[in-house]
Image (cartoon, rainbow, N blue to C red):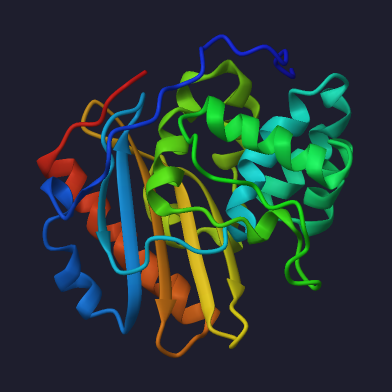
Length: 258
């Protein structure tokens, strides 16, 4: 069932500034030094609150991770039920053609960007500007949105708290097997990945989602840029990062709830 376009939760105020390398992220730089590239992580308690960040990679092109707010925007428009199949494919299989269908359903590029940006704002991210122009002709406009890990973790922290996101969060529980690296190796994780090369061909590989933590849940965003520049090495880095944070949050922190 598609939820109605009206949100049951009021827009969220800007989050407090992120803190660096504290609590469960203490020691991340030591891990990153062993990974063979640049990496970053941000976490936030479900329901909102201060983000914690660590690592040298803290922003970059959103790539396919932007398909989550895109799918929410498309499904919550009038007539959004007609986009269910495209939303499922865009999230579970990261299908680019399906994501373009969702984007086109939102109107002209500037209108589509405004609607996706409104979803971000309503889910705790008031700062990210969704790209409406094809800055790299071979890639989607929305995929080139600059999305920081801190802002992405804040967005993720409200996914379990809105009726608007229930359908898409369910798709994030059902990601295809070939994309279950990184956060996908953690039991009970709901997540979405994205990846792509910069103009020099070096891959940025990133994910965000919700993982169990204590008696609650934690929002996590991670990213890697490996020295080799390869996609496979990037996914291997994210798996090591996910395993590291998964083990730490089970012992040193409790997750929150909405």
